[in-house]
Length: 383
Image (cartoon, rainbow, N blue to C red; front, top):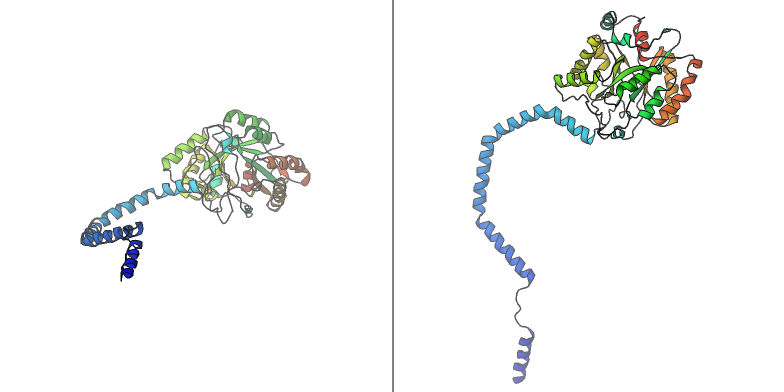
């Protein structure tokens, strides 16, 4: 018996009562929290019912006002958001063409290159029957038009197929711009209105025997930055008029205007009408750069009686010398097929090199370099 008590005492000493561990204390707290929630469940139900009642009573008025504000601000928000994040390129024409780098100019917005994509297909203009479009012919018959006054003299419209090479984005990168206007011509130099020393540069280009145009910045569909003073679809008619007028006053001696970027704005008829109505009384021509197949620029110009032409080929979507050479061969083919062609390039290194090689060969190939105004005259049958 004593032996059993002894063993029992030893067993008790080996198994003392232990305090609750951390796990047990945590479980106890969760049980207490659950009991508290169950105790206040009726209060949660009442609060929920009150919220549902208030929402049904006032939600309709709030939603109507909210939707109305969305409708008013939709265009502005879309513009800002798309210019920040970029949108897919126009499936019909590919990505926006590459443009001069704005960050090379101090105090101007940062330029973002377009993402690489497939080359833009060539836009081939259908041959037009002889005759004068009535609206445009009416403009041509009016006195001293600026496009005629500032046109580079060119006589032989019908002797050879005409090749008009337009160099866009001139004025930003001044060393390359100078190299562009030192090329043999006649070429057409299109100056951005926010370039520095613009009047002096334009004068130098004209002194080298080239025609001048104004490269008017317009809103693109993607992430490219068109630069200061660009025309946006979110602007009022008055804002578009003001920005257009400011650009038109940036320098003088130019024959017409073509769009810088603008794949979104040139598809926006109200905005294009506002722009073209400012070109008409000034007697300026409009070159639709066709950065989107949805552009209404040429059609709207004809409807308003503004002399206009279109771009057929972009030379340097692919900025390699071989790619530009291939495009120049395409320029020759289109010129022979329809009697004239308008090609647009930029003062990129590859473009300048390819043009330096190709321009001296044009005459020997039975073609004639011509300013943009000569193509306008030939296209419309004007003397």
